[in-house]
Length: 260
Length: 284
Image (cartoon, rainbow over all chains, first blue to last red; front, side):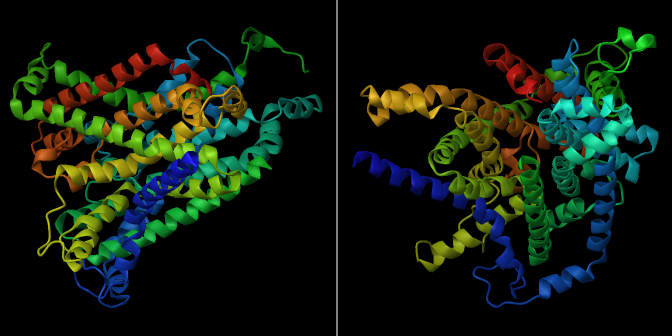
């Protein structure tokens, strides 16, 4: 009797926590379809006018294109740097491995503001502020840990005998990697790539400092959010939420493939 | 196995070379720029602690430090209190139910912090959700000021940090052997005693890992405090941005960064000494 009572209490408490997690995210979707010209609850009428408004604002369009370019380049280069590195971390033992690993994943914990101003200062001398490469290089720093975490967890689950078999049959290391390992880790890698894409696409703090006059989408949103809370913001936020959720479900789909 | 020839035989594993491109890159675009800027805070034409000294002696700046630590501690405590029952629920329910509920915790991870903070502005704004509900219920007659204050910062930060608490906590809990709990029950312990004496002590490493993660991420947080807080809720990251962006005071921003980074590393080091962070890193 007593335990049952506690269980209901637990369910109730957790429901509240779940609402606390979900409501602030999904609240912006009904707002984005509002016909009111300012934030208003509940929306007086439904309309698509804020999406129309958004599509008319060319600066948002440029922001989306620029963010897409940066995110795609970031993901590609993080994979090129991160996958070999995870391979080394999983397959070899050496002195100071813990320190090296901590260093590589440290951008996940260290405040992005420190990375931002450090690179901003360096880029100012190198004339890299406002360049797509400057931005991409900075994003690679913060995204690679996620690629490594995803890849190493899959790599560790691989049967090393598969590689040995390939090598005994005469394949060299590169062929073994391309024909045996890569196909096996591909789903995990894709899941990591999706997360990295979203992180880069949504990144604000570093972009704010390094973008110069060429604004990424989050920087463009940031400018509006500080001035006025128009429902245009709700429209672009809703689009971003849908993008994130799509990426999330795609990534879970890939991860399931790894497990089976 | 193919015959190992040449100099390769002196090297136990050649894979280690695959680390070099990444390490080279991180040295150039991460380690070096950060080291350089941090150094500039204590060295300009000679060694100086003037900027560090300023942080601790100018009351305005010192208050920012205190505020940062206070907000981070409150957020961490709230995340433990809110996250623990949820992680326990995940342990308790059937696998299928858990997988569904996990989505609610994982999705926020994937949604932009900027968008989530905007969500809170929609909730707490003058014409936002809370004020509309309270007014239509007749509890208040004019909108309350819910934004740009400390509670707003707490709300936003707790919501963003909560998944960082729940996930490590659940990953530790999921390894707790259910037979231990059964053994306790069979030996006559009440459910409360089983929880208190067996389950809770075994889940503590998760509380510590999640707690330290939330605390450290909170101390360096920028977006949420700068959008939801007012002038009184400036945290150290916001102050650093302001010093660079508005005042072009690089040396002082660098000194603040040095302080923040040292604080992060010392906390991590201490945590490692006391509870062994290596276990987590070894899993990578």
